[in-house]
Length: 71
Image (cartoon, rainbow, N blue to C red; front, top):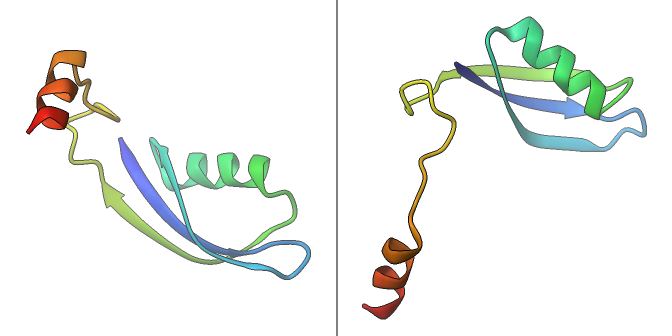
């Protein structure tokens, strides 16, 4: 899985610096981006390989969180 960091201009002209989208390829990421920001203009796209080994996020147990809080 890849992550793509986009910088875009919205249809109203607002610049959004960093929109990170996970997808199999850049076309898929652009399709997701266009669903969220219709009629946006892509200024920059930087691909990054996901470091999670295929997982998007790691799970944390309640006990781990409580241990971290109590320290």
